[in-house]
Length: 620
Image 1 (cartoon, rainbow, N blue to C red):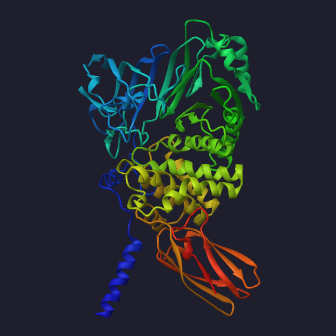
Image 2: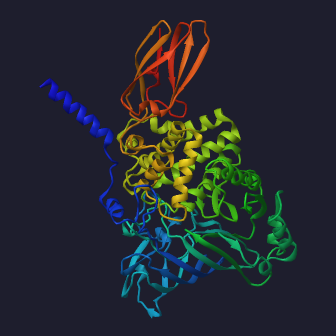
Image 3: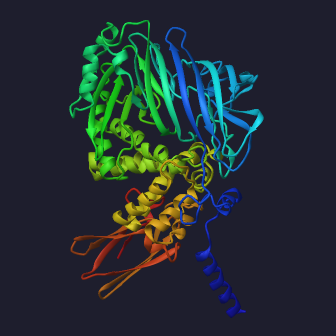
C-alpha cells in the first residue's frame, strides 16, 4: 500500500509537470485548423479580414452633431461564406438602453446613432438603427463568398455627448471625436463574428484597415488626427503652415499657434468650412480632435529610419501639457531604443488635453495633472506605450485586456526608472499598482489572469489587466535576463505584428523565442488563483552554510532578495530569480555560503509586495 501510494505520488507529480496549458475548445479548434501554430507563429492557414475605408465626416460645432458617409471595400479572406455583416458603433454606449458597466450621468446620455442609408453592392437595405446597441448584425440578401469582396456604403449621424470621456465634448468648443463611424466588426478564426457589446469598461478589438478621412470643420477650428496630414496647404494660413512644416524637421518645440492666434482667425483658412484630410494604412482605428482655442505645440524626433512628428493640443495655462511635446519626443526615442526596443512604427503622435487617459492609434487623450509632473509624465508614457500593445500587435482587448494593459503598465514602469530613478519608480508602482490588490484578501482579487476580461469586473478586472499581468512580465524578465527576454519578446512581436494574437500565441512564441519550455511559468501565473506571500519556516547555520526553508504560501513564482545582516552589522543582499520555483512552487530550501555569523535574514520582493511581510524575517 505504501509503495503504491508513493508510485501514485510520483505519477501525479510527473503528470502535473508535463501537462499542457489549459486551452478552451474554440482555441483548440483554431490550432487543429492550422490558423495558429504550436510554435507561436501564425499557422499555415492563418487569415484575417480587412476593410478599406473612405470616410467623409462633418462636425457641426453649433448643433454638436457628427454626420458622415463612408465607402468600405471589405475583403472576406476567411474560408467561410458570410451570411451577415456585424456592424459596430461604440458610441451607442451613450444610448440610455445600452448595457454599461457602471453609473453614468445625464450628460453622458444621447440618442445615439441614426443610419440614414445602408447599401451593400449597390443594393439598399432597410435598417432600423433605433434597435442597435454597440454592435448589430445585418442579414445579407446575398452571402459574401469566401475570398470575395463587398462594397458597403453607409450614411449616418450622431450627437456628441456633453460629458467627455474617451470621446465627446471636452468643452463646448473642443471635441474628441473617437469611435465616430460605423465599422464592420472583426470576424476571426476562433470566434467568428465579434458580437460582444461594448460596456465602457473593456476596450476594443478591430481589424487592420486602411483609412482615408476628409474632416469638415468650421473655420478657426484646428483638427488633429490619426495618420498623415495630407493637405496642410489647403487649410492653414501661410505663417502657420510655415511653422507646422518647420516642426516636422525640428528637435525644438515650436508653438505653431497660441489660443489668441486661433481665436483671432489668423491660423486656418477663413472659409466657412475647411476640409482636413488624413490617411493611415494597416491600422486598427482612426480618431480626431478639434478645437478653436487650444494651443498647438509641435516638434519631431529622429528615429532610426524616419523622423516622427510629435504634437500637442491643450488649454492655455495647462502647465504639464506645456511639457508634453518634450516628454513625448523623449519617450518615442526611449521606447524605440530600450523597451520594447522596437522602433515607433508611425509617423506622428499627438496628445490632446481631455479627460480619458486613453490611447488611440497615433493619439492620446489625457487628463491634465498640473500639480504632479511625475504622474502626468507617466500617464503619457503609459498611453504611448499602448502603441505597441494593442495597436502594433492587433490584440483583442475586449477578451484579453492583460495582453495590452499589462504591457503598457510594464513599459511605464521601465521608462519610469529612467526618468525618475529606481526607488521613485518602485514606490510609484507599489502605491499605484500593487498595494490595493495585495492588501485585500477578498475572493475577487485573486481570479486567474487568463479569465476572459468580459467575465470579471471591478477589482478583478483591474488586477488581471494591469497589476498581475505586469508583474508576470517583470518576473519573466527577471527569470530569463534582459537579453533573452528581449529576444523572446521580439520573436513574439515579429510573429504577430499586424495580426491578431491570443494568449496562447504569446505563451508559445515566448517558449520558442527563449528556447525554453515556460509552461510551468504560464500555469503558475495565468491559470491559478495565486497571490504573493512568502514565509520563512525554518533556518539553521552550521559552519559556512546558512540553510533557509521558504514556503510559497501565495503561490506565485516571484523573484526576491534575501537580506543577510551579520553580527558585525554588515549587510549582504542576494538575488533569487523565479527560476528557484521551477521544480517546486510550494517550498524551496536556500543554501547560502557564509563567512561569518548571521544575525538575521529577511526576504524582500520590492514591487512583488508580500501579503504578510511580517513572516519574511528571522533572527538568530
